[in-house]
Length: 358
Image 1 (cartoon, rainbow, N blue to C red):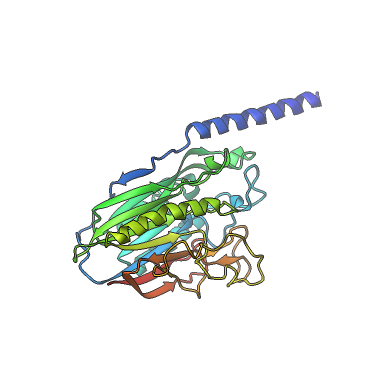
Image 2: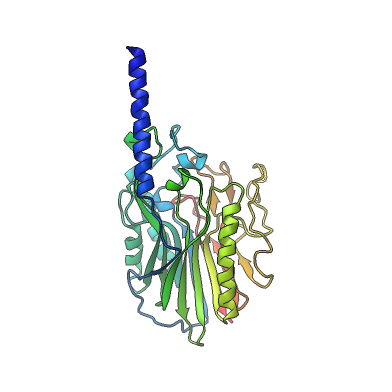
């Protein structure tokens, strides 16, 4: 009798796994490589008519990865959470989201580049973060690029009563000026099945802003791959984007790239903030990726990401710097500042920059 119960239970588990994997595969988001994006709201200003601009980049962690959170998938878990957080309580998400909204409002940058912004997801209690941020700046253009759309994410696979569930998330840009065109580029490189069913479809948003001198300011909002331990996918993605950046600069345009690179700037010590932490391979961007006259701009005094395998406590988790900017030679960085929020609202921290158009 016991043997029969065990066999029946095992068969049900296998059937459940097969059903959810088939369902996830059937509904897997498959975006085109190039998609023209329609703004959700329009800007009142049509042309950049000043010589300096303030930009902000921040991976807001969908309001679910503040200081109180650890995250099961950061430890590579698919089957069981192991007691780690799948999604935080609604009160924590509200606390994080309120803090994120207030921080962004206080900065009021000319161009705001955000990553991991939810439109409607179980993990953030279906609050439309993209819309809420847009309401802070009603005169700004607002655009969105999907990079995580799952009808049902069944992880952890063996905890069906509290799975990750439905997700609709992406990268969002808000600008004081109207773009002539915004394009979503699907970045190359995929993980093997079934892992790719649960991971982001990495993308970049390219924004074209007209400048009073007849040129264009090309702004890229990026969020590169995170879980490729050998760095192969990240290298494919940066090489793919590099060709576009160089072509725009060769055409006489200004190029600024900001976002979550999931790599450390060239030559910057990945363990600068935690010298005692284990060294990590493929942590730095290849210093030969871009010509020498392109500039990597970051604040070396403030870490921008923490390790979400642990709840945050001061000086405990591994921290590093992976959120920053890249500028073409015809742009000058006047100021860059990492905003130290002690990781209260997200596992990343915002970075601001003031640039001058030469």
